[in-house]
Amino acid sequence: MSERSAAVRPGAGLSLTGVSHDYGRRRAVDNVDFDVAPGEILGLLGPSGCGKSTTLRLVAGLEDLQQGEVRIGGEVMAGRSINIPTERRQVGMVFQDHALFPHLSVAQNIVFGLGHLPAAERAARIERWGGRLGLTNLLQSYPHHLSGGEQQRVALARAMAPEPRVMLLDEPFSSLDSRLRDQIRDETVEVLKLAGTATLLVTHDPEEAMRMGDRIAIMQAGRIEQIDTPARVYAAPATPFVARFLSETNELPVRVSGGAVDTPFGRLPAPARIAEGSAALLMFRPEALQESQPGQGVAAVTVERAMALGAYRRLEVGVAGQRFAARLPAGPLPASGAVLHFGLNPDFCFVFPAA
Image: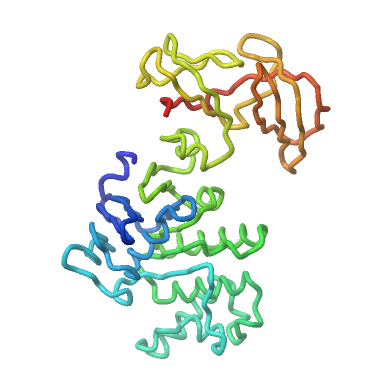
């Protein structure tokens, strides 16, 4: 875990300190620390079963906290002797299942649970959040009349109408088709930023986390492996797991010699923390392989397979008995057996100690 995540930032909307949770003998969440500032979106990213949804449920109060502390707006919501009920935590929640009330109109769904407010204030919130989410012309419609994207907007409007301090999103867009999913993601970010709401987004989709998150927390087996901006997590993964989870990787066992490692594409510098003579693992993303003119640090490779994938081409190439994946901009596909020349961009290469 990065030092950046170890301390709570001033004014954090949501803070977790030393949070752990067990299900029987299985530790689902293991000593998790992070914070989310007002107006910030933190993407909690990891594979199924890594503990990210349990973390969200602990923030919401849907699970009783066993160890650690949860604060919202600087106030302790759960700790050693405190457990504030969910309805008093001022959190909004949106899940994959929109859970709209089928017998209520869009307007009634939006202000459900706000019966304690005066009628004029309820009407104002319907107008405010219905308008911000493009639902003004649908306020008298019922959920079964709406598309999946419209239902998702209603669910978000309902979660935002109480004007929560923290928004919790648990895989909320996974049921939408890809083009609509991108649109709803962007609209959601705009609404959350406008409201200044601290947001925790739980997802297993790296693209979603990088598209929406100001920062990303990568989780494995209950622990946070790295927290940083999307650009930094992608360009400087802290562990092999983080590198693999964010995208396809090529991997090559190497040995450190003279502060560098040898590859079929020339020598690359090794981190100083890896001792001279030690075994190491070189990982590089497919876009690290770049077509070049013959020369130093460039290898002749044989094309074994080529695929057109819209905006880019994916090639599988062979060199020195190894097979690597390359990702190139869209263009003509080389024939199988063609010989090309590739070099390695070190900005997309990572050297880790051998496991």
